Image (cartoon, rainbow, N blue to C red; front, side, top):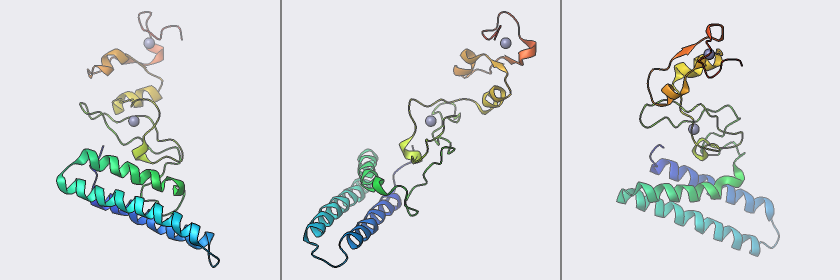
Length: 171
Ligand SMILES: [Zn+2]
Ligand SMILES: [Zn+2]
């Protein structure tokens, strides 16, 4: 997970602020707008407080709290995820998961689901795999995943070279 920075926090805060302004203008362009103003004020104050606290947390060097607060801002921004100015790229279903294995650095082969931001991740755990193994898998090779998961160089062969001791024999 990349570290939270002030720029990201500010981008979310400004995005929410702009959307709330828009919402207020579309809902109540001219007529009595007291209830709308009240709703706007509440939402705006929530976003502002979250952003102020995030900046504070960053100044204290508290990344954990900053990350929590950024999630708060993300949740407030989520109704406008389809908006062109949304501060984070949204997956079309093909965006690769950006989190690599902490020990081996192998990339995760899962994709971010359509309509989700990379920070929201994907269902289930990560599936980290050596790029070489992914390539072999796509080529239909039989890979010994036990050695692969232990981080050792994996044993593999193409289907035509298969032997009865292979776990995929008879497929
Ligand atoms: Zn992943
Ligand atoms: Zn085999």
